[in-house]
Amino acid sequence: MAGVFAPYLQDEEDDITLYTNPISNVGKSVETILNHVAKGKFKITTIDLFKQEHKKEEFTKINPMQQVPALMFNGTMLNESNSINRFLADYYKLHDLYPQDPSARHRVDTLMDLQGNMV
Ligand SMILES: N[C@@H](CCC(=O)N[C@@H](CS)C(=O)NCC(=O)O)C(=O)O
Image (cartoon, rainbow, N blue to C red; front, side, top):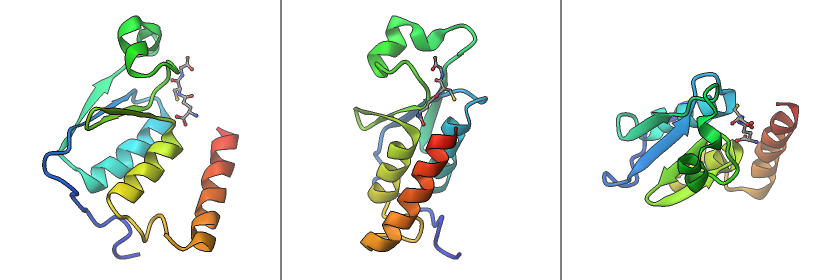
């Protein structure tokens, strides 16, 4: 599986903040990808779900869906963990992880969608 998680920094200047919480499995999936492509180059802001911080106006401005994870990526807000992970795989050219070939990509998308429907 060499290369699947090969670190690949697209741009040293990428400005990345992940809004998440340690109890969030879907947040952890985004953090895992970020750790491989941008280790040490991104910030984590913990949103306290038990204190309802995700419902507050400040966070709602970041993610109107009022959920974690959310990713602020070079000024653009991304939400939905699977969509974020697909974006990161494309942006950092993780083609071993997220293939470009339509049939191979469909297999990966199917597994991601199935997993998403089970959470
Ligand atoms: N489909 C979303 C699910 C996100 C989600 O359910 N996040 C939970 C934490 S794991 C959350 O923020 N819950 C707070 C709420 O919905 O009020 C994704 O994959 O990002």
